[in-house]
Length: 332
Ligand code: DGY
Image (cartoon, rainbow, N blue to C red; front, side, top):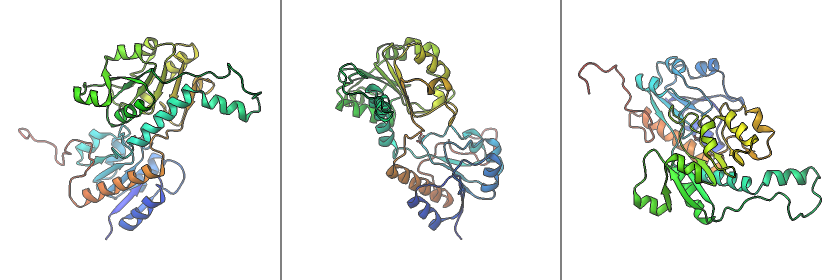
């Protein structure tokens, strides 16, 4: 008998094909996220759930299915899942690290370039028929060559962004929870800075940190006030890392020069103050959105489910060793 799996959104067709071949697959075939009631109903009695970053998998959802063994999140971030609730019930949570690193780094650079060279403004000018011809002072952007890129979060994606900076002749500084070994710093040509110094010196600040209680609103009004008035802020990590209202105010009042955002605090809603500003580029969470990457992510999800349902360790488990039974006194 094929194992029963519930999938909350349709995935690229090579992944759907493999899922249908390997599993007794039930899935949401509407082009929208499920409500909590639909999600709970859909996953009932199934040992495997494939969730999206847009599905809140809280304790209530987890507890609704006593047969659940694995939540395979189709994303690298797992902030949408109550990991504690999953662990306490012996449920493995997995993610998709590595395969989306390059796609997300590429998208970060598309935001940097479009913002620095005012690409959306130029596109709008041409499309709306308001372009009257070449103009020596029209839509002047800013050079990247020789400028300072400040990366906050030097994990896989931060480093991939750093590697690409070399090609654009940028100088690199970074901040990370833990400073990298000097040999790694040398390899990626980046110098460590305390957060406040990075913010005060970088021409472009790019965020590559996970969303945790510690990083929520890391970029707030006070922090934005420390940035250069000519600086650009890029966020391809998670929306709530930035206080969006404070960012809209900072942009409006010229405290910083621009922002490129792929993620938002309350997706798909976007702070109204941001929509009308010309100095922002807004994307609908496209970090991993290439056919190759989304296909690889799907295959990783499948591998993790197969391992867990065969009683093997999941290659990409993110929660600590789940506790099947509550720990007893004296247990390690
Ligand atoms: C992730 O996997 O966390 C990315 O945000 C997806 O685009």
